[in-house]
Length: 111
Image 1: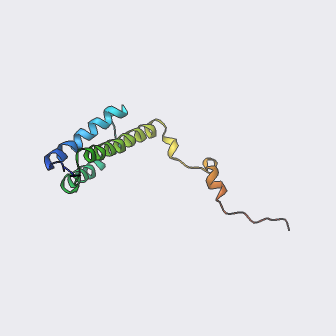
Image 2: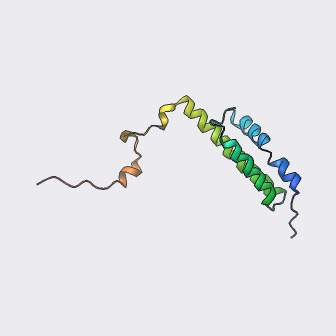
């Protein structure tokens, strides 16, 4: 089986950061991704992907889908935090049952 690697231009087009952000906004129904400082890192990551990965069309589609899904998750998370800012605060009452089960046992004071 021969792997037909997509061209640099095709990779750049498929991994265009603005197009990825637009698609993620459309899929999530949310236009804000929170703090925009991550966009620079997104641009660098997609540039390096286009330069370095050796993939066929199927592989490129998988990479694109993964990045879009991560952006969708970010948009939805930011949207949820804006709607429910207290959801990020942690109190002892919100400990999960698993963390309670793994908490160190308290010594018995039955003396």
